[in-house]
Amino acid sequence: MTDALPDPPASVPEGDALAAALARAGLDQLWPFDVAWLGGETRAALEVACGTTVAGRALLVANSRALWPHLLRAVSDERARTGSVAPHPLQRYVDAQLSRAIAARPGARAVASHDGPPYVPMQRIAAESGFGWPSPAHLIVHATLGPWVALRAVIVGLGEAQLGARPEPAPCTHCDEGCAPAFEAARGSGDWRDWLAVREACPLGRTWRYSDAQSRYHYTKDLRALAE
Image 1 (cartoon, rainbow, N blue to C red):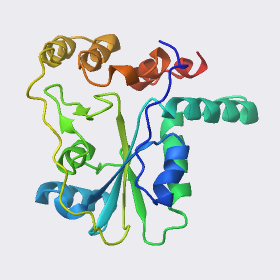
Image 2 (image 1 turned 30 degrees about the vertical axis):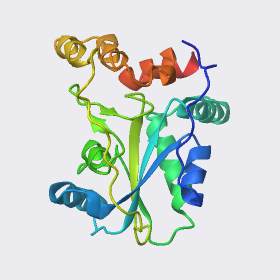
Image 3 (image 1 turned 180 degrees about the horizontal axis):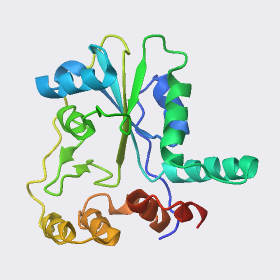
């Protein structure tokens, strides 16, 4: 699997300059939602993570395989400037893009999935907002990308929602292939490839599978994957 494969289509709310800026940086799956769509427990956990009450329109920030070349360029630039790469390059890249995107939006606050504790309940927000549905293997499955999507952040404080009713994603109830056997096998394994196999077992989104290097970094955080 190479990085030359095409990226999936970006999902950007029409007319949303903040979301468009994130998409140009490889954070290409943007899902607006009304905080009122969330269950009470999830909303309370989001407020704890944000350190403030939240209401109105929010934005779930995720990415497909499209993020990978942007991250590689950022790492290459850092290595050229400093001669090395500091720890957690992906987290630092996401933080930088979030800060840049919300700079012109007074009142907006971005909380990344890696911020915490307390952590944002990303999977619950993704499921309850209609972005995707939880699989038997505890992965969020997107209608187009399948499990080949990573939840990165939530941005709150974006004004009135005006989004209508919550979308209802179709649950994983009619899958003949199933990720459950792969998940059970991976639970007793220390090999990251077995956890990758859980994602690969899903029939949805296989066109948009991560590259081998991206998959390796996703599961191991091995910086050598960034140089391959």
